[in-house]
Amino acid sequence: MQSPAELFINAVCEQAKSSPGLPYVLTFAPLAQINPFQRLLYCRASQAGYAVVPTVQFTDLASINWKGRSVIHLHWLASVLAGSETQVETQERVVAFEQEMLRWRRGGHKILWTLHNVLPHNTHFPEAEIALRRVLVENSDAIHILSEQSVEEARKYYAVPDDKIFFVPHPSYEGWYANVGDKAAARLDLGLEPDEFAFVQFGALQPYKGVLQLVDAFRSLKQRYPLRRFRLVVAGNPVDKQYVGQILDAIAYEPEIRLIQSAMQEKEIQTLFNAADVLVAPYVKTLNSGVSLLAATFKKPLVAPNVAGVAQTFADDSHLLYSGGDGDNLLDALDRSLTYRIDDSVFEKILETYRPNRISSLFFETVTQRLFASKTDVEQAGQYV
Image (tube, rainbow, N blue to C red):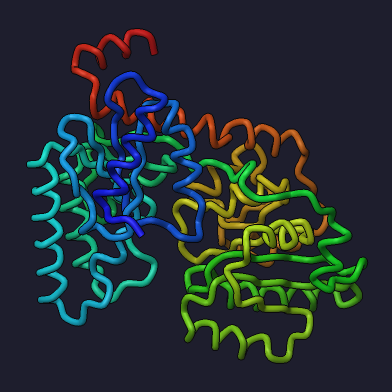
């Protein structure tokens, strides 16, 4: 175990091996333990002249003053108000977080926020969450969005000034997950028969993921095609125990549906995805969906709502995305997926566009220009855009 200060110094010293000058330092929180998004986003940090320092808690940020070359990068904010029991307590926490941000700014740190979600998926105090984000927007030097629709959605709840926003999309997972198995072996591992059409849903088991809605649609699909054999595999970290109980009740008499209550080890992801005929992400509410990039990484068709990050990823072929209206709901999209095939060229273009090295380089170039370039530098750079 290392203290935040030790992590900071070690990261700077390591970066000094490949940089003749003082590096920029990007300290981020909270650290995502399972989702590799942050590792992919920061994968070109060293080449860009950045030392990256992970922290688990917001209170560990700004442990050392690196005035003039420091970025505090904030990600998910759910922990700020987590466990609050009263409105008064939430207000106190918002004020405390604002004071923390002011302390960072006084220390000469630049503050960057990545807008992953407009609001937390499950919140008991929406007004406090909105107030927290207003504080965040006010005190951030820049706001990173992962999909161009993010700002439009966020502005339904709080103002987001144009001059603070920059867009760099979510990277794909290409190269992160092993993919050396074949479909036959993967289906054998999951106990799927050769003549079964397999749908797979992967992700944390929470209400907004729409698992219960998928179970209902899957039943209806079986009724439409009584002579065909279907299987549904739902796998994910059982975050919401109550919701998991509801899922188990819903599938109690559905032998064709299998629930795997596990975040899945990285080496197992390829088994799950290679076994699938179609990936399904029937999210009730979504903004930036990593699963769309994960599906593209394994070159698997995806059934999902035609919104935000999903629509952005599959812009060249949205045939399996659904609007939710009459004649174009989840069931209709599942039906279309039985016969429709996405051309490999679509996946190749997605992988080229969202390649982690490319996205990471673009991210750091933009951060440097936004936070550290002089006004003259920015104006001159604009002449060549």
